[in-house]
Image (cartoon, rainbow, N blue to C red; front, side, top):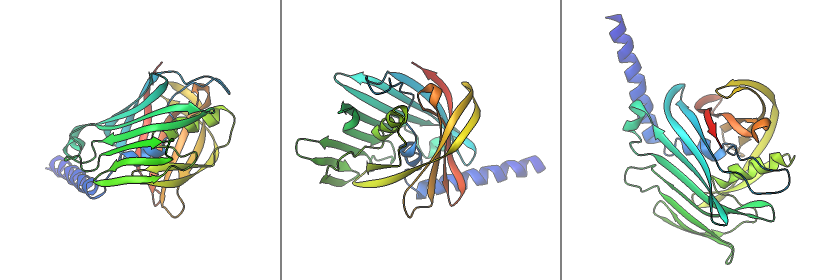
Length: 259
């Protein structure tokens, strides 16, 4: 009888976590939004990024909850950076569809300049879908965020939730010490702070790697993301954790890399 009680207790905890997910929208994207850039090898100071695909295991409170696929592909004279997260097991009750993010960007004066951004899969009825266009001709960001019409000024240097990942990696590869980014998230611009916290050697699915540890947060928020970036892999993020009030709720770890 004891094993049954343990199993029931486990299921009860899982149900409570699902209820929590339903009450708190966008449980996956905040971590990816702050996640360091994908494995895009930059030549120091010149040249475009190279295409790649990488997979990550996603965990919710220590329980494997899904898998993330990041891809960078050429799109004419621009680039497309996409993330696809597929929930596993009991978490499919919350997210039966894959969560998708996609950014199209160009390099402008050596910096990443987003052209468009979209995300879908948060709500079953697609009421939380986002579709944005960054119009540099008019200096406006236009589109839809859920059911809200977006028409906001295009702030200089602003990034979208995916392009910011590539720009962060580019700056690190250039030897810069990034300390802030302005991000257009859903329907407004937000500022994120980045702080280097040290160097750590990690055992990963790709072997033992030296990493630099960065902390990312917003003023007045108890949400903190920590990123372990591998310089020898072009500042590929090999691990990431998001915490609230000091407790880790979401984490990602590298599984594979193809270039």
